[in-house]
Each structure stands twice: as structure tokens, then as C-alpha cells.
Image (cartoon, rainbow, N blue to C red; front, side, top):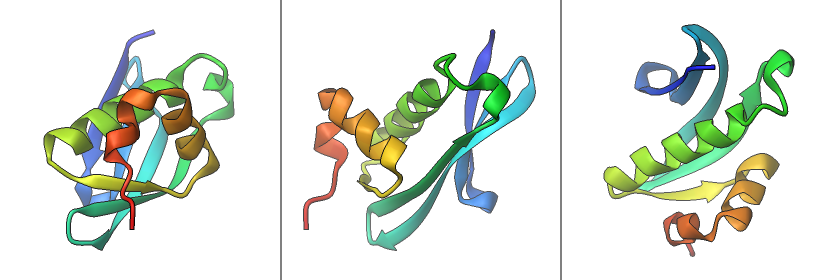
Length: 95
């Protein structure tokens, strides 16, 4: 399965496609200068358990890092992903 993740700023989300078909997204919104909230991650149930959501999070967080931003992972999946992947811990905004 060929996965592609792209930022769709007009929809305030990162979108993941599998073999060219949209199958999920990671929503975001700016909560303060340089800080994005990640309130929702969703993947088509037909693609659950295949690593699609994890790839979506990896690519999204890598792009957020390239832009020098921080995140507040609100979605339980986003929170768990960051906890399981401590290499992304530096992206979490601490207030």
C-alpha cells in the first residue's frame, strides 16, 4: 500500500491517501502563535490496524517540526502516539 500524507491548510488538516484514495486525516488549528492543537485523527475503518494512522501522525509531526511549530495533542490517538514515540516529545507545547 502506497501512503501519501499532505497538508491541506484550506481544510486545516493533514490528509492521508492510500494508493491515491483519501482514507483519513489529522485535524489541526492554531491556538496561539506557533502552537497547533491536534483535536482529531480519523482513518477509514477499512484501513484501521494497518499503520495508516501512525504514518499519518509521523508525517504530520515531521512537517510541523520542519515549520518550527509546537503541538497540543488533544486527540487520544495523537496523545498515545507521542507517548509511544518519545522522539516527538520535544514538539509538545508545555504551558
